[in-house]
Amino acid sequence: MVDINIVICEYISKEWIKNTFNRASANEHDIDEKTVRQIKKIKETYYSISIPTLEKICTAREITLHDLFKLIKR
Image 1 (cartoon, rainbow, N blue to C red):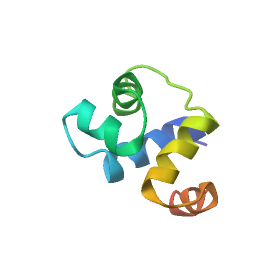
Image 2: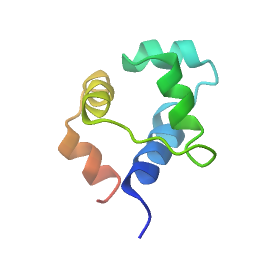
Image 3: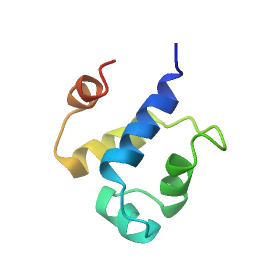
């Protein structure tokens, strides 16, 4: 089974953080630029995304954590 952090970060990276400008993506999702870089580079460097960070991203997207997990089918 694939690690849940990888699944979440890959989904966020592919579906929500398509913008190559980290600052714009960070502002759009209410997170730091460093976090955007870590999410986008999940395959290169392991990043354990926190629940508060997920909640910030989901709030910016106007969805719940429950909805996020439904989207990634986990």
